[in-house]
Image (cartoon, rainbow, N blue to C red):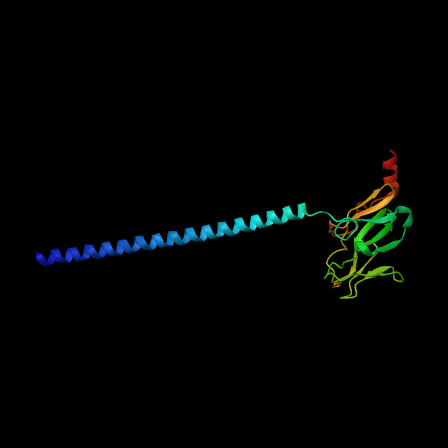
Length: 191
Ligand code: FES
């Protein structure tokens, strides 16, 4: 009788210990999971705050006029006859006068960023770094450039061509709607 009682107590004691161990383990697991969740939440919050701060700083940063990154006055419309391609060095773009209007194309190759010179004799842009070739509208004639030359927004204000080099427009192909017509603009200004 006495031995059976002792045996039962030992078994109960073991069961208790196993139960306690299980509880501790699940408590630990719960804590670890909570720590991971908290850590992920902190990281996500920091990333969001960082992005918010970067946008705010970009917004607050004064826009430089007359320098790359700000608005550049390329000149008056009549200085750029139809068919002309003019390199505006201070704005790092080509002002191209097509039949449908003006385009301001960043002179930066869309492959790895080399400056792309205009080859008047071949009527095309040729990148000296890896050989990409673009036509006068900036479209890729041969790679490795993945897309046409990027654009900057252009406005014609009282006969002057103003280009905003702070905003880059990427495109997949040329569309006449990307050009700004001086003729149309003059009519709009009159009307
Ligand atoms: S940077 Fe122009 S082709 Fe590579």
